[in-house]
Length: 233
Image (cartoon, rainbow, N blue to C red; front, top):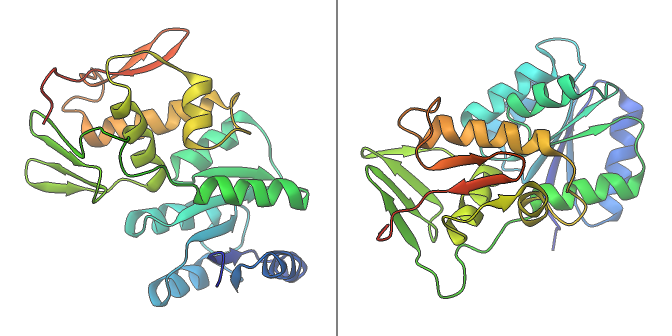
């Protein structure tokens, strides 16, 4: 049984061949695409668990491809790039990527990033409620659906897992490191920019006024807290 279906998107044939060989040997089913346009067409016709997406490609480019994918799909996305500035990382995450890896990278790092991107938290905490209502916002952990004013809000898997973890620890300040390691995995702890981007994305989707959050609150120098009413469901 396949460990997961991965689409590799890179304009360099050698990189596509190396990634196909490496990932196939680890049990993944691997497909590849040379351009962003080819990737979007492949995603329309096939289901993938994860996309490895080069940031610098001819045509529409990696960033625009990422935005196009994210507008229509919740598939996990890891951006590949030779640039390593915080600005580039934030730009990739803002475009909808779940993670970011800098070339050249080793096989152990790549495999760890893939496992982290595919990692999913349990649908609900043991003994905890499976649904929550925050005024006009309905959150169902069992179905992983969020409804606002009768309209479904699309969350990426990582956004949903971040929200789920905060719901499981309501009204408590959760440190950055604890949130990162709970949602992405034990190898993550210092990537505070990940949280800044994902929290901002989540606020845009669930807060009535994202610039003045009511539920997802910042705890200065600590982390974040989900303000939950005493009777949320």
